[in-house]
Length: 523
Image (tube, rainbow, N blue to C red; front, side, top):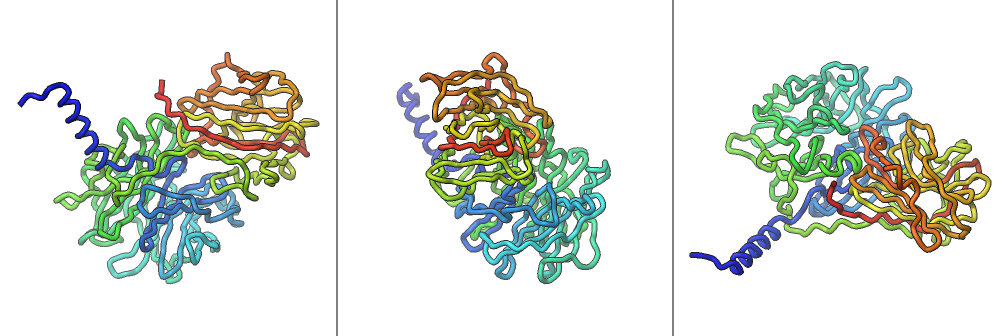
């Protein structure tokens, strides 16, 4: 039978509609910078968290009923734990006998080692009580996770950070105390990096018991940055404590055209027995500028007993919704500062807690104590979820006297940022690189009670800046081809930040911030 052109078009449309119906969600499911995601199921509720690195509040708590639509509900810590100073990585959620646990990594200033610590709460939303470090080996201990053996005894598995000293890395196991707060007995090495694809390290273990075997999913090679080489492998054993056999077809998840460097996640099982893997990967288009985003894939089991993900083709771009629910569309960020406190999506470097208040629909930022005339006397920021966006804010000029400055920045960290600063009757384009500030361009602006600032990003690093004056946008540094390729730290994405600084008494008032996603094809 021959199809007429019109009939062929109709048939194609019907087939596409069927595909669209079956493929209900698109990765990522955690949009933005959510490395090392951990997920558990308690009843019909799914709870997740992720690495915070150097951004406070520490460790987001996210909730879902369908694994693809997540809502930020809170954080584990509003301030860094007193025993620690930095490197807040790889939190792992656990629920046991009515108590929530989070096992997390931090650096202890007393010995400068990475330690695994634990906090508990009666509810996923807290309040959380920190119990301090459990272990900190000489070369560092990270990525702690709790597993139960064939006898019902609970163990913590973790990685020693040998790669930080150019030494081998191992996945260790040690028995957990009844209360889950201490390690008891002797530690045992389970596996190490000994396969070419694993490179200098293995890390991020999680174990699933299926049939006669314990399956250990783990990450290998370089996790982060533009030169990352991460992948996911699996090994199995009939005992939690080994010996383990690594899969001959490792890595089971590696890069593809859409997603790069996939790994470090946890497995969660649905009530009907399906297994899903929530892990991170870089969007191949937005890469390091957005950060490592949370992606989800179902684990399929072969006749040989070994798992596969997306038929070995890397992270899924599209996949069938676990519960048939539709995925909510990507949304823009907007805050008009109508609440008494900053919303849950706002972050700040934990080394510089901001001084602020919200009053009459305005965010009032002030230079923090002891920060003198620093350009970033206070800074608050939000994540980006695409490399193509436009961020706009409205600034009051009445307080910008005696050196006070208000800013809108693409913010990598305290030492690396680029943005537009308003104060003293002018707008300046300021680049901070390795903690050194450089004025790239400036323009005088007409007197006005309020001034609009705009920053536009394309492909994450091509940046432009403008001020609204005289009824039009005036670009600053338009002839400079401003690049933010230096911004991302090795383990974080770029944020959009509002800042106040320039003097010890600096005050900056903002009416709102809007970050509009612009899905522009990479050039």
